[in-house]
Image 1 (cartoon, each protein chain N blue to C red):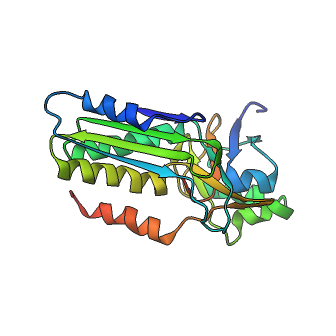
Image 2: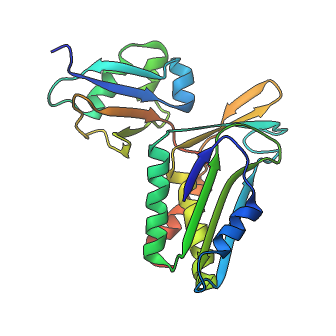
Length: 86
Length: 152
């Protein structure tokens, strides 16, 4: 099942700290946003901050989501800091 | 109508467009936000703004739709710039035309307050060689939450 992937995107401070705009990651049935976040944090170094003290917001397919939101193949999952526009 | 763009905008032309929103229009309120010299840093010399293309526009459209449910809104216009901006540059424009001033004031303030805490934009302050991603302010969250308590 090499084609069962989703896209992860990072914005602003997270994009800079991780030096990563986007990733394709394999996804398994039943996975949630929280699973994805802990997998990414386990890469260590800057990635560990994804589950650290700084607030990280998440959107799935461009709608705000929560840790228990399920993710599936083809989804676009975005992680970003609290927003500061205007 | 919503525009997220790198280029500047003409607030006067936007006002004239709102004036043309029909003979039932009796009030227009516009807001412009500018790059200021102090924020989280002092001696700010410019900003860099980033957004989430697609989601940003969807969130703003949701705010305009909500404003139109709560108040009389004839026409609403939101422009937000992204990229590198200099001191005193225009960042954001919100304009609302309505039958009455109270609705125009409330709808404009609601869209602006809610945009600041829900539309995916991120602002980095630049001060000489120093750069700093702006932190979300509790006061902005409070202002936005004040609109949650029901129709204005």
